[in-house]
Image 1 (tube, rainbow, N blue to C red):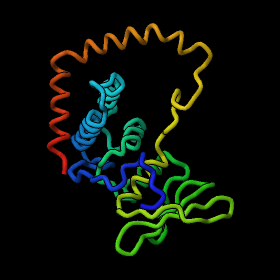
Image 2: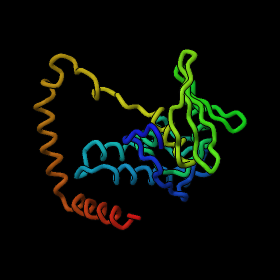
Image 3: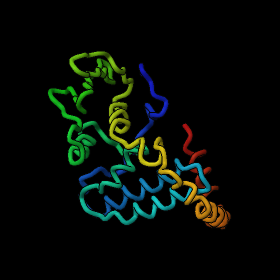
Length: 213
């Protein structure tokens, strides 16, 4: 890919057995959520981190209807969840949330607004992406893989600067929370030392090693 961004896992494989929304049955939704929970746990390199554990518990409470909850979609985008999204499938999900979500016309995709982007299929696979801003047009990226367009959309529509990351905390707020945070970190470290999480760490490493190409 030209204009690569190393924070996007270009070319990462998909898992064809993960159901896509809209789900035909509650069981399909459960299978999606369980796969998302496991994906989050595998990409987390903590012992596990407290945030990953809390997120897994919250995902389990999102319901079993035909559509993704806002949280499920947010987590799927942020973690580049490898469900077998096609551009059309992900665009349909984003349409319910994004005012300027991807739109397709005769095989060409356009998304966002000022700047907006256009993706044209390349001969032999992949996409040529242009960026348009205030009347200007320029090449933006050459995507080598068909699925890289999905990954680009995940990158464009995920939240990358939620508070407090990249923000200046309110005066004194961090200091006020620090003592409690230290206590919770110690408690979490004690929990992480328990056998059930030691077993998970070993299982996580086995999954990651056995799944290497």
